[in-house]
Image (cartoon, rainbow, N blue to C red; front, side, top):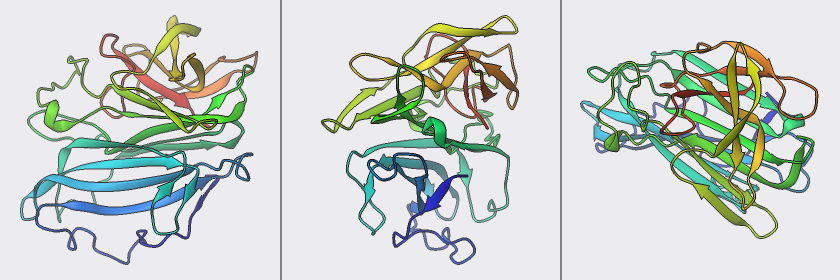
Length: 284
């Protein structure tokens, strides 16, 4: 996937540790891993991504609410910490995780596109919890370098697009996602020139359409800089137009179309609390 796992200590190694058994009774960190995106800027401002799974809101004997902390930056300290130009976001998802739940697996999506400076993951989308019928993914994020005017990635900064879901603050959910304020996107942009962070905490900014697909507007997210810059890889489509997993082509910059894939309103995050639109991201 054009990713290299770092040599940082403390990372989870598949099959070597029962992370649930080692949890304190009130929960904590299940595991983490750190990867570097292998794109053209690894020698100047490489992007490192730490994906950490957390077990919270419960007790070991019963089960926990699972979620994740995504941290992105341009260096690591070798001890499992992201340093330099770093930004982080934590999501608390809405379903239980118990010792009997290890084998639960649902549809997941991931892509890396080094020529666009892009990396996205939606993991285990589809798991449900009665009575709210939630289908939120415990790991759902997109990372993109800020594009140049022609849509190519620049070496000026990056944005972390992630889910704004906090289960403890969103307990009223129904199966058709009628509550638009649930699972809205959070965008956090880091500018390398001054290491400044810009955040849009309740819905990612998105404006006029880039193209039409089957009569539906494709609206693209924007990097949250003082002057918004259109994302070349992250957007949205009206929820009733294309289903989860559907792929389509849309032209964002220039004349060359980009292949996108659709998530649904439950498994990832929405662009705003007003429009019932679903996340799409570049997928190759």
